[in-house]
Image 1 (cartoon, rainbow, N blue to C red):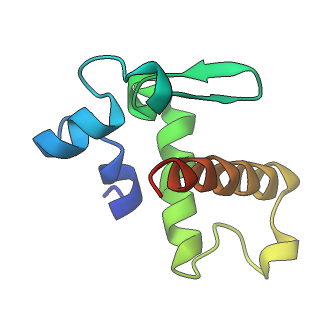
Image 2 (cartoon, rainbow, N blue to C red):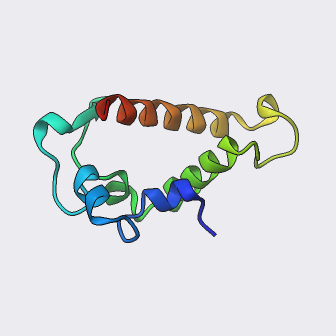
Image 3 (cartoon, rainbow, N blue to C red):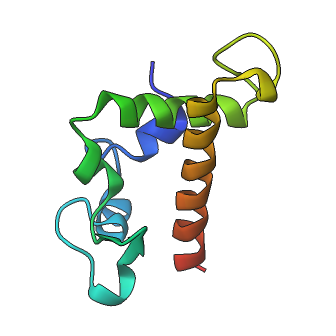
Length: 102
């Protein structure tokens, strides 16, 4: 079962307003687009990552982490480095998205 976070990035289940705000169907206006580490993003993240199992699993794990559920035994510092780095990068990407809609 997908987490609420992963579902919110699924263009198929998003409502028309969200689809237009996030660029699910067509590119966003240039002033609404942004760049991450030199990569220009003008569409919904799901548009770019829809064929990547890793991306959706990472989004699910991010949602679980927000609820205090970790994928491996122990605390946050006991998690594999790749998990911690991925969660930190997702936090960064979501912060960029939130800043854009302020």
